[in-house]
Structures are given as structure tokens and as C-alpha cells.
Image 1 (cartoon, rainbow, N blue to C red):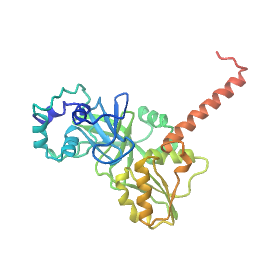
Image 2 (cartoon, rainbow, N blue to C red):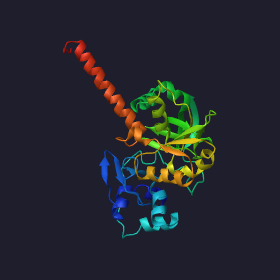
Image 3 (tube, rainbow, N blue to C red):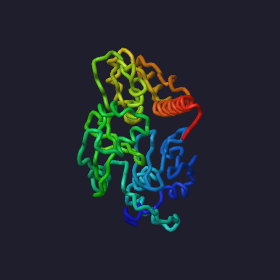
Image 4 (cartoon, one colour):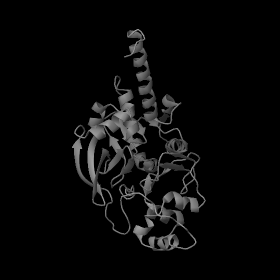
Length: 309
């Protein structure tokens, strides 16, 4: 079996053969308890259309080759032999987009970036990117200060996404159907000379916080992890601050993040109480936007005397 033939195999079917089943399914997304680490809340996603996985807890992802090597603890050659074994019966994955967005940035076979940035532009020229951010509740005037339109190629095909740059020059990339990053993966530190810092797991949470506090801007520096797996890289930076306000997701990974910072002796404050009924800041923002729409609808109804045309 070749690598290309292996990529025809459905990741969902591979996991099923390993007696690993999804906790729930939403559209084309299959959510699992990660088979690569211990967790209680499913954060391991497989997109059945693209045939790619992404482990939100570790910040890693890729195609069936990437997953298979980790799952079976073997190299590519041994994996291909295993997948080609008559003891494992698979059917081809039917998707013309299966190789479009490989979340891992480097493959052992080529040693070349899978995601290649071709250009970046200021937000505003690409309506689809702007609409995606607005659909997430993000104020575009705020997003323009920190995000770019990023145009990139994967396997010779061109794509675009909202991009957030890290301190090493890589980009976190987000779109309606894609979550990934270009190489190198790193944290983002926005230093403005304040004595306190707000720490957020991802840039959507960062933009959500700024949107929620648009009328009363947060007077603080910011540190965006871009993955909880990169938390260790933030420790030396955070030790220089008087106070670190942490905005973890309300899940097991978020709890471990708080424990890591507390064990490191940081003067940190768990700020997640402001979204106690939601998983994260963006979910809170989306809920507040929905409430605002309901209020405006009711006000319009009253002004019209209950008549709608």
C-alpha cells in the first residue's frame, strides 16, 4: 500500500476498527475522547468530508498517516503494511477535498511545509473572511487590528482564511470549515507595558474578549497560547507580570492549564467565572449577540404596534 492509497481510507473507519467510537456527531464532524491521551470531555475531532483529524487538547492534527503513526507507535513503512493487511478491511474515503487541509505542517516524506503562505492582506477585501468573523460575533474594527487575510496553498491548490500571527511568524488559520496553523507553531505575546496580562487559549477568545469589552477596553497586556499544549512556553513571560488573568475553556484541558500555572507559582486569577454558563468567551459572545437580536426584535415589534409586513 502507498501513502496515497492509505489516504483513501476513512479515519472514522480506522478508529472503528480499533474499537474507538465517537461520543457524538455533528454534521461531518465526529467527536471522540482522544485516543492519544486521557480526557473526560471529547475534544478529538475528525472531519469525515476532509478526512482529517484535529486534537484540540494537544493542538496537533493531520491525515490518516499522521494519526496512524501516533496510534500504532510505528513509522510510515510499518503503518502502510498494517493498513494493507488482509486482517484490516477498509473502504476508500470518498471525498475530493480529503487532502485540501492537512492540519500538520510537515510530513516526514517531503520535509516541506504542507501549508504554504502565498500572501497576506489587511482584512476587508475578502467578504467571505469578514463574514466568517462576524458570524462568530467578532467586531471587524477590532479584528482588523490583529488579523490578516491569509492566502495559502496546499498540494498546489489555493485557499484563504482569517489569520492570526504568532511571535515566530506562523499563523493560526480559521475558516468556516477549517482550523489549523502554518509553521512554525508558537504563542502570541501582545506587550503594551502593563503590569497585568490576560492569558487566552486561542485568538477567537482574544477577539471575543476585546469585542465584549469594546466600550470599556481591558487595560492589560495579552498572551494567546494558540494551543494549551504550548503553555510551558508562556511561563517565563508570565513570571514578569504582577497578575495573570487566565481565561481557560471550561473543560478538562482548561482545568489542567490553571493547575499548571498555579503549580508554577504564578499570581494568577481564574477569570472563567464571567462565562460560567458557557464553554469559552466566544460562546458567551455568541449568546450575548443572540440576546441583543431578540431585544431589538421585541423593540421593533412594540414600535410597530405588533404589526409586521
